[in-house]
Image (cartoon, rainbow, N blue to C red; front, side, top):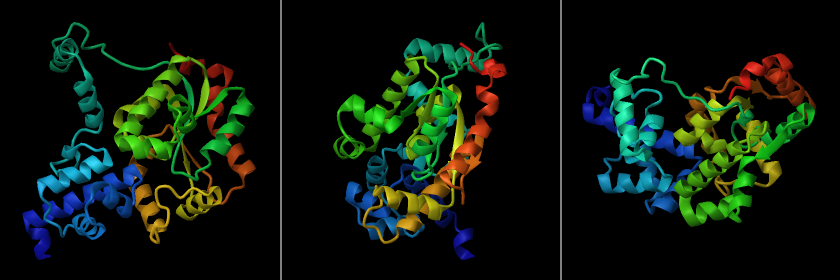
Length: 301
């Protein structure tokens, strides 16, 4: 109880929770984070448990290793839900755009009352952890409704001539997320109705995920952690948890960190304990209102 009444201890606990949550969003095990940051796995465990009074230099190494903003790890109240998106847009904006944004936010802009944004309807996007069935079910759905099917990670590999693992090894998580955003932009430029299977960690990049949510009818494919792990093992892909004896614990951490973001999807399809055909039928039923002829209201732009 003494710890909870101590503001400094409470701050360190919140800091540790943020580091653990960000690591989960990025899909990184402690072992991987330790290797990339050059900080011992034991020290990272202490930091995440609120026991490590980390220096700002070491915390910066942790944030850089995760491709995160240092400020996102510092406990400072609860920001607005869309703040990460707004912040990143401001960082990319030209001076004239910033001035226009200030006018709108202050209520002085000529079109402040009617200001809105939105992208043309691009199709259906499937989000969720690896092993959720996004590729398998996405292909079946695309065949059923006659739309194109795109696996975003494969598109990134095709455009850059490197595997996802090679991209991350060469350019880090931040470099991969930039390529992911670029690939998504090129996909949207085709203006072709698509069933899109995304990477599990796409929710960790605010701008990219916001573009997914605004452009696609987004569905979270959900399953039990044990099913996710079994399917990943069947695929022979344990990235980024290979050779990690605590792989299941790490997977649960990732899921816990991402669940609030996955939950922003337009719909949830739970595939737990279902065969592939039964899961496909459930997914097709979930998108019926969107692909029906009378749902043209979605195809704006």
